[in-house]
Length: 555
Ligand code: GLN
Image (cartoon, rainbow, N blue to C red; front, side):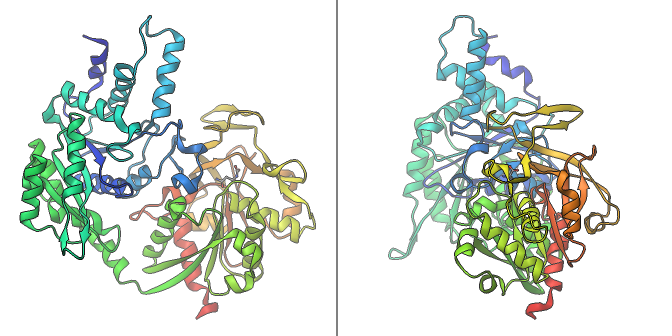
């Protein structure tokens, strides 16, 4: 067998592959489309896995600015990925893994490491076959008899960066057999009001482009603000060389929980099952989606929560947070309206004016000094006015600094993240345990992939508010941080009314702080938003939103 076909040894016998590409414009919502298709297939009883192949050169998005790339999603096993895996986890409920996300940078890194190691035995290393082989190996790696593996290719067809991926999936279909592979292309049918028509030409061009790469799409999922008339579907089908039943409308809907319902109604899952010749007599059971979409449409009331952060110019930067707040709202039958506040604007403005119309305040994760004064002003406001407060990761660190500065009298309390010139209440973490092994970091080490990442256990004080909220004194939550509150200051914090109520199992790392003198004031070193799902909302968010609803100061 040729070297390039060795990956087929790892191919599970029954798994089918759906490759999802995007055309016409970016931001078509391919990630949401992929997650929605996964969830409807799952609702038909299939075992589904979703993978994301990103064509950029970063090894992972961990070092990228959230305002460029959106949030960095973290898996239980500590991978830093794009936000699409977050959609997948929220829609399907299964945790994603390190092996579900790859970038061009990571592929090249693997190939070049092998080259340096001498594994290629004198060969000239080329995009084809070495990079394409590595992509194919990734596609079949770590599979466990899934019925369907959905692989979403990032970017838009025609991008230079995406070409090796298109070539790899073309080869994959050739190697594995066309009957086990579906090419699903997501496009846009723009509506031109003056013509009163949906336009199909951009879709035709995009399909031509795919065909140039040797890929004939089998199904088109067309974003559209209105139903696509049958004659237009037939026209698209004819020009794009596929069956009219496989031209499917992805209609604009008023909330994301409606997407799987809408796709099923348009026949997406039936078309996928029909294509692969798998049993499709039983329709997907989407009752739980209908219920949740109904709650979102008819909430009992509305609650306003301020999120004071630095990346508010791109809300994708707080994707999981926004979703977790919505989940907390749904659990309470309420709509959460988020007031996004730029922490720097708060520094220049008047916190009393900017925060007096919200029921609760949240300071999310973040990096760097810019905007921190504003965050601390928001925390002080929440503390003094007894407004429910949730501090996440950096937000927790800022809550500790606010208490140290304003109540413990340590005016220069700071974090070494901003330099040495402070009382190091928050400091660089250089050693911790992961799965029984000691992790060691140095201050001048690499920034990429070296934080305390992924799921870690945390032990709670049984009499704490947080233990009551979780209904347990042992929890596991996902982390992504490099700095840590220094327990040497615990006595001073206690004297200033702040209590450490959660720690790592060895007691070395503080994980949660509370203020017993406040109705709801919690800071957590981890990111509870990453595990929140519409059908299993994060307990902290459910309780936080409830506290916001109960905060009657605005009623
Ligand atoms: N910058 C802080 C740290 O590295 C907080 C990180 C975060 O909020 N995710 O510890």
